[in-house]
Image 1 (tube, one colour):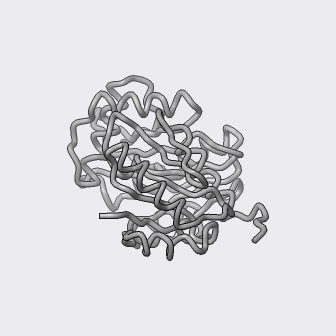
Image 2 (cartoon, rainbow, N blue to C red):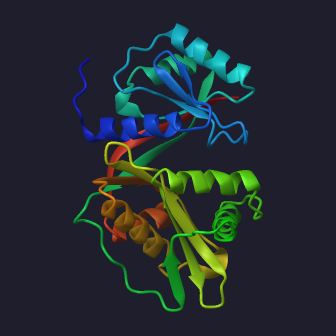
Length: 256
C-alpha cells in the first residue's frame, strides 16, 4: 500500500516526531516508543507506528518486550488509517482498546478570536513558578495531584525551549485559572493538548480562549496545521467555536 502525504499521514508523522523527542526514545522495528525515565505515566510513555510501515506479529512481540524491559505498560496511540491492519495484530497479542477519538484540526485563516475575557490575562509562562501553576491547574482539572513535580516543570521548560507553546490564564488576583500547550511543530504540524480550566472558571469561554491563543501563537511560528482531541462534547464544541473541525480517527490501545 502506497501512502501519499494525506492529512492523516501528516498527523501521524507529527506523533512519531513527538515521541522521538522523549529523553530516551526507543526504535523497535516499525515503531517508535517514546520513553521518559522521570515518569511512569502511560500517557507519556507509549508507542506509535511509522505511517505506512509493514508490521508483523513478530514486530508487536518485540514492542511488548521493549515495554517490559523498560518496566512500562505496553500502550499505543495512532491514526487508524496509517496502520489499518495493526489493531487486529495488537488484539491477537492481548491488547484492549481504550478509546477511539476523533481528532480535530485548524489551519491558518480558520482560527477565530473569541470574545475577550474580563479580568483574565493569557500569556506564556516564563518562570518555573508560572510553569508549576499551569501544570497544577492541568493536574487538578484532570483529576490528578494539583502539586506539580520538579520533573513536570522541567519537561514543560524543555518543550518550550524546543519550540513548543504554553499558555497560562491568570486572574487579576494572580490565580491560575487554567492553561494548555502545544508540542514543538514537526513539518509545520503541532498537537495542541492539555487544555484545562479549573472548576470555578468553567463555562465562561476560558477553554476556547486558551485554545485560540495557543493556536495563533503556533501559526505565528510558521506552523500550518494545529490538531487536538476533545475529551467530550462540551470541549469539542469549544474547539469548534474557535475554528477546529473533525478530520480523522485515532486509536488508544493498551495491554493490561
